[in-house]
Image 1: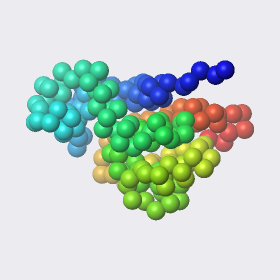
Image 2: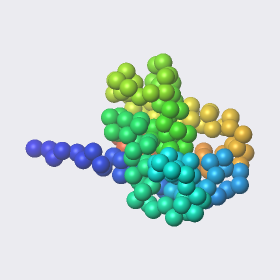
Image 3: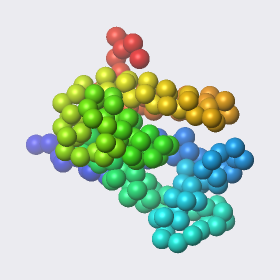
Length: 184
């Protein structure tokens, strides 16, 4: 008899990956997101709390509150728990970096379906019927293509590329697709 898989485990696994890339408090003058902590911007924290917040509020953000925001505003919004293993991480990381709607459009583009920016039954069905490793690899190409066209690529591109490739590798591992004959 197999034990039921916890619905929390995939989120926790993905969150560890995202937080490893996001780090703590940062206020880079060329980052259009402004001050961030655990990757949460001032704007996102304001929306989550339902009121304007200061840079100090961002600086004092707890890891627990960041995790709650990530689950509610990103993981749940993109219906990651309903996606195949590995694909959930890949889309979650894109949502964190580029927003849930863009993540949904990138997934839809990688699946070859109409891109409306909402993950609904049609997108979920296409994701479940696709080979996860192939979709993850297509997502990496789409994502790097998008990021490389941003004006801030010369400043942040090296780190973004490293992150995207690291997420791809972990997503492929979660999908059970890293093997000796992988050309990844």
